[in-house]
Length: 304
Image (cartoon, rainbow, N blue to C red; front, side, top):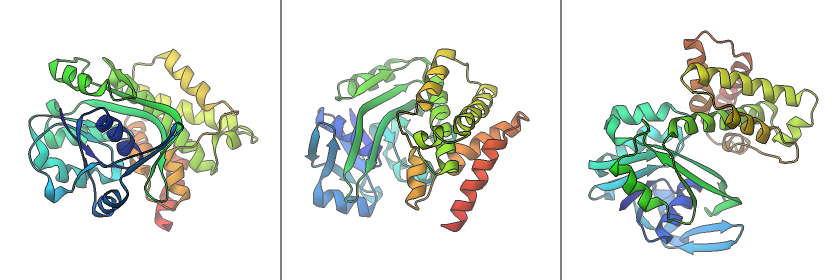
């Protein structure tokens, strides 16, 4: 299977590297700066097991040739418009596009651009970041990759995707209910991002502060009410596990949005929090804490 990995940051770099190591034909679509970095130093993975370096197959938008069987989109959500233009020449009649982005807005955006039959569901669970020299740092052994048809019908096309991905040295989950998985990932990451960005700290610091546990639980409840109104069929055991994970004071956690914010980078405020507010308004839901988070993030973006 010919695979195009759009992006070679922490997510795209890690999962693309594992696919390449498993023998898949993987090309990384990257910008000039990342292209030069990877050409010079290779794609470096720092994992709990040690350091690995591979020489990746690279392309830039103006050098893409031919169609790809699978395009995995791993950029930040605010870069999606440009990436859609970049990958367009690589999309053929049989191409499938699997976005691994935060939130859900990107699905409709990709479907409008390339057609509903082209887009499948995807998400990952990994604690990873880029180091100062562009190395991919996997901070814990967690490395799960979920995928499946958005309508739950995993036909022969999806079976081929599964055949390519399942032996890539990561924990793969071929899901027949990917939409619920996507809703639950959004519940987790938006709660985590909201409380960390609002409180400017990790979950351990928040939970051991006066009122911190109540803040986290109330933000979680607001977000759950929004996604339920939008169509999430609540799975009580799954939502309870998410809240339990977030509420463990022994495990300090932060979100990628919080880490980007503390480093002065652009953040996915509209895609992670703003879109929830738009959906809440559609159902006349009161979300005062989400509104407070959104104002906080907007002020940050104005001050960058």
